[in-house]
Image 1 (cartoon, helix red, strand yellow):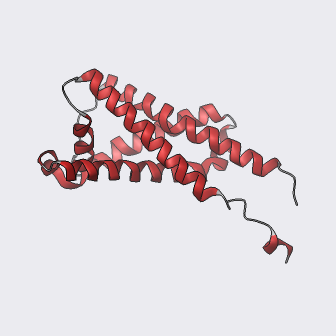
Image 2 (cartoon, rainbow, N blue to C red):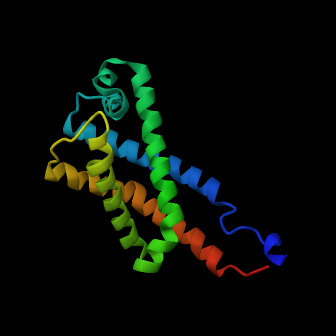
Length: 168
């Protein structure tokens, strides 16, 4: 009976995951916009989100206007929320294996990059495309900094507090 009265250790996971998904999606989106501006100053942010929308809508995304930009933004955040949720929930597993939140962040950034570039994008309407080394390294760095590190730091803090907080 006593177990029923104890709060779940994931009681507050949903708000944390929601906040983290919004944070990581925003950081990753801003990084993509900055990187796009650096590599092609004439391209606007809309091109990034049209490209993301093209995964579902194909080439029509580049002529669809505002609707496709909104679809791209929605898709971008959906993907960020999915990866953030997976990482946050799997963090204790990673922590038992690696025991260093910064190395976990790097490993997770690499996993996200591999899944997106070797599975998701090739299976989408974008299809397989040649990956340039400098673009891959930049993408990896962005994912490590914008997804891996924020989620690892916050998950480590939340799980550490849950693990070591006094029992009531």
